[in-house]
Image 1 (cartoon, rainbow, N blue to C red):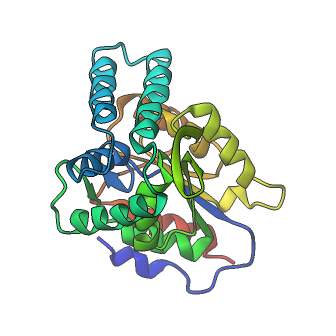
Image 2 (cartoon, rainbow, N blue to C red; image 1 turned 45 degrees about the vertical axis):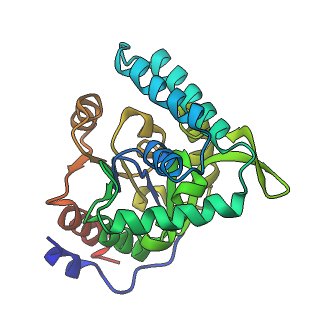
Length: 258
């Protein structure tokens, strides 16, 4: 893996190109919101009853039919309970804990959560073609260190309310909801965006707003519903073994004659 990355031209033609990238399940294994909440709870930096409620949310969703209505309710409840878990905590303290969380992640000390080995090189490739934009339903404070680690250009994520440096327990923006994610994607697809030579990466049906917005959608992972859509529409399907080579080849194909 990585040999084909040498095919990517050093100089690309000018133009406004973007790469929309999901995080949970695409760049990382595991769900950031839950792993970070558990980490905070284990370090006495989260309201424990809220962590209990989050676990109940997961149990209810697991027992559901996993349909659209069930997911929407799960997305609302989980983020509300996460926000309540931060209520009255200092923003600066939680942000510092996020940094420590990712130090533990890099040491493989966080159960059921890791950054995929191909993620740094994938973001590096996308930074060559345009602006990388991570779009995630997980909360912004939990992902800010990952943005720095991977050198992502922008991060759009769930926002928890703040006042005077303290978390209010209110949800300002819930990007776990498909409708909210679609709004964010729309902000980046402007008239001068070269959508035909822009990219997107996602692993579930909830990433469709990103994948449908660009000319080069890549499906990561084994979600059967999304894989069916990808095969029907002729989208690229990648995994940890072939991601870098496949993406580099696509870049080379798009720009080889420019």
